[in-house]
Length: 107
Image 1 (cartoon, rainbow, N blue to C red):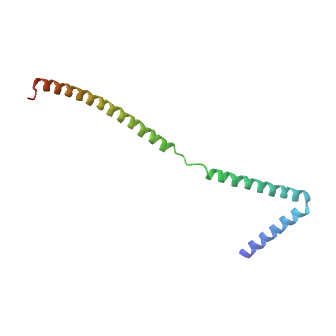
Image 2: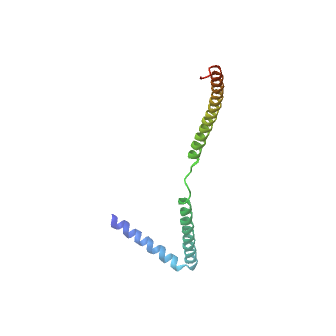
Image 3: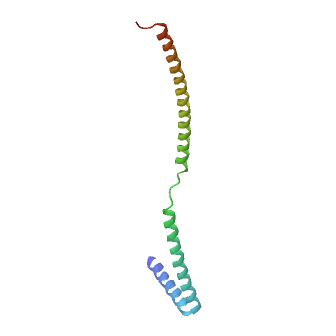
């Protein structure tokens, strides 16, 4: 069975080559097609190389970094408010201490 198929395939290949070689128009078309295939193959390889050089998508990473940045900005604002509150408290304590020192002078 496989012998029959291989024989039939061989006969078909021979017929296709003999029919192309007999007709000059078909031979010209075949050569044009081979040239176009080589051209397209070259373009395909160039495009595949360009695709492989494209950097990975980092939009999710950028989105995460933006969220982290917003969170840190909020934390900074909160800490700045706390610093301001503590400085006011320090100023008040220093005033109270000065009043205390005036009231109770060390002799």
